[in-house]
Length: 278
Image 1 (tube, rainbow, N blue to C red):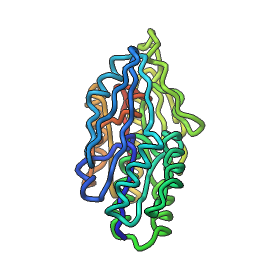
Image 2 (tube, rainbow, N blue to C red; image 1 turned 180 degrees about the vertical axis):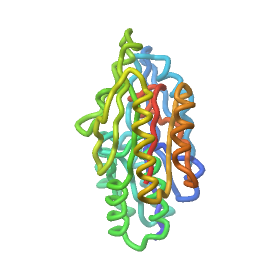
Image 3 (cartoon, rainbow, N blue to C red; image 1 turned 90 degrees about the vertical axis):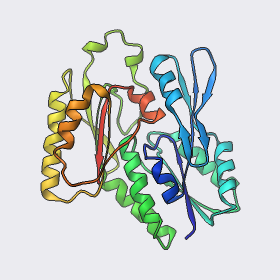
């Protein structure tokens, strides 16, 4: 199979893997409080997001816009000149508009076989999902094999996020209200767990100590009962010490620090810890 992979930039995967697995990203658009739009610059297999991350961090009134149907049609048509099939990977939970736009664009491009793969992962778990599925795609013999592997991966990725976004769940993902909340220091942190395609709230506290302890205990139990293949994580600087302690619970396993995506930054801000493993 001569296959290319299309992702939207909510996927937190290292750009070093783009060329290795023929991964092509689509960027987002940020509109600031002055009604100016800023496009997440994309070249072939590269992304430039730092400027937009800075805008989101500083401007409480920013809006985030997904890649359009036109964007998808253009990249699908471009890739059809070189590849004979496309796998387009998006999240109907974290980025539902993107997922729907990909489905519509698929119907508009007839020059190539396109399969749109759904996942409920977000943040570091989305990067982990794409890397593991990309490895499989590189040696897969049929699209049915890829579909089955995607379903299996979604079921077996385990992810924890500590955040102040109390609305992170399987029903909807809402932009966190901390941007407008002047009483930030009194707002709880929430610990969420993703497993078997579902996000669930585990606990909450104003202090993160117990939340990190919960993650570390889970990791200790997991590493005693099975071998982990891969670990992704993201951590803001104020959680650096806790992140180091948590990662020390996982030895001799590849670990990848993923950069925050625009979607994660928009939903979670710059004050969260996120770890995923499979």
